[in-house]
Image (spheres, rainbow, N blue to C red):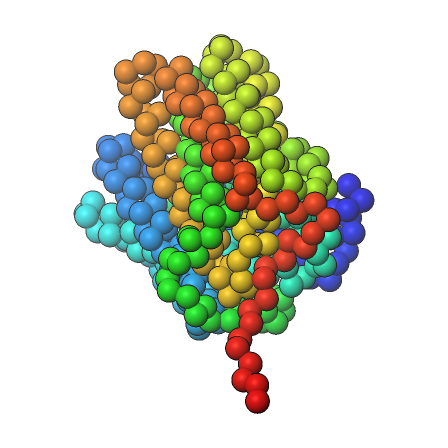
Length: 400
């Protein structure tokens, strides 16, 4: 814990972590808030699913694009514009009665205009700390984001059931605006300038580390989405069983991220951490009791934040600074697509095989997520004793 204490004492680190957590907190609220709100409006979960699908598609498309724009127009301009548009779209959904096609269109606009806070903050991190602190900082960030996924759904469910569904959306919008302004106004955002990339859009995917990170993140988040569907199907939407199990699952990730944050990253690190995820999810298929699932998924969760920290570090160490934001945008897009596919596959299997089908799907995706970095490890860097900071941008210098 000493390394984390020194990190948080580094000027700007505690502020930028706190600001980005508040700004991203609506990410843990809006999907469920939209689901409950639209279902109350139309009486159909299928309608709510269409709005959520449109939102996810918009986020997947926009992630690399808006991230790249930050190098062309500046972080504050892009973040301010997307924040304004996204907030307007979210408030319109909450406050204006509309037909379903309009809600779908607004869901798409919400996704397209989601502020690229995550790529921005992970581009800023290497400029805040020295090279020896960067890997622990990525681990701390990956662990801290679990707070979003533990508290967000709980807060949304409480507000929607005890007050009104519309208030869960309004509170999420308020956090989006407050956290977004706090993050944008942070001095660190103004001091870091991302150079415009000279490469074609998408060419960063030719970097093996970015491709492996995107693929592994796709499989990891797909497995997590399948687990969530399976747990909810096991315990139903009444009672506390599902909430307790999923909270313990996320707590495992928080604990794992803090425990492994100081461990040096070798070319085997991603495979080892994905093996822990795979092991826990495979064990979860052996029974549907609450405490069995809680224990096995805690083990699986203990590998999630550490695996994400490895992905962030290997991407950071292998791309030029001007390409880091776009690279993290692609990582985010892979995770969003994984979440959508994992949920869809799990839903199909639940309908045909019951909750165990979703858990088997999760274990299978996690095992593939272990195999990918295992067989592709020769393209993964060994960062033990090395700098995980992005490669400097260089220009040709004319000589006589």
